Length: 431
Image (cartoon, rainbow, N blue to C red; front, side, top):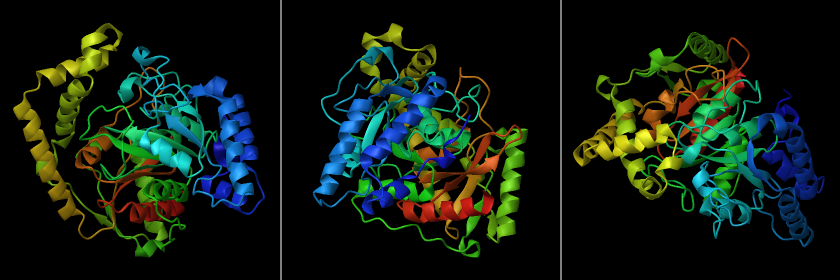
């Protein structure tokens, strides 16, 4: 399948609009043509409304013609994961319970993106309540393979060039894993850095707003738009100035043969480019954090989805029902101890990272698994989501069958720009 390498990125679109070389309507129509061509095979969209997209784009053009100051995302097509409320589009949460549901207002992140000039093209497919039961979306690199989840439609839409930017979220590995499988950049910011108001809650201690893009600069553009900060291109630091701590983590044995080969090839390319690599080991007492994350997620999901559990239990998938039951069976004392273990883990990892700019860790076990009945294993993201640290997927490597395998960078709390600068440097070295 033709991937989105020839589609413009968000920064390029914004620059062309500011220079008068392009209209937002032109950009929207080009995106619509690509969606029309690829959607029958990829099925990335839950809702796609061309008329609504054109109306938004024409509004951007009118404001530009009136010499209004354009927002950072002026004219940029945006996909929105279908757990984000939208006032003008249905929000189904990947569940038959909410089929046709019409929220009264946009989620705060969607409202901020619109205020910055983004053109919302529609809602992308997600798994049921952003857990594990997949929708129909296929991987653009090979439609017989999963795109990952739960931000499946968003990852596929960006990878195929339908849109340059897409909203997603992460509770276990729902941004980093699909980004790795589909070969795109993704940012999971520090937990709590951006509002989740209007986004369906699952496990509030873990739920994190994020987004996917084809370049690190596009990730930064969205970050600045949501934070209300001025945008500047990421600094391209020389490879020798980047200090990376390399850590396969306690979950390293979960790498499959192709994932391990890609991991080693990525390290070799970084060393050849002159990036200083410092081998680090996770403290032994952090070996149980994957299970800690599972405990927190189950306990909180059981409470977040209590109304659906009480009123619509037959319409819940078996995996989700089992998770909720496990959460209900988890004693409060075990949940409180899990939160305490997470706090100790944050302190230990902060100490581990004190002399490096970022940790380099696996993003996924390997290439996207074959088949659409499951979305893959989030094992390499669970710990970092639990600890609330910012993470980025860096594409540029391929596995043995030609599918993408990403590298994950873990940064310091509230240092997303520095993390993205490191991501741009790593991408330049491995791609």
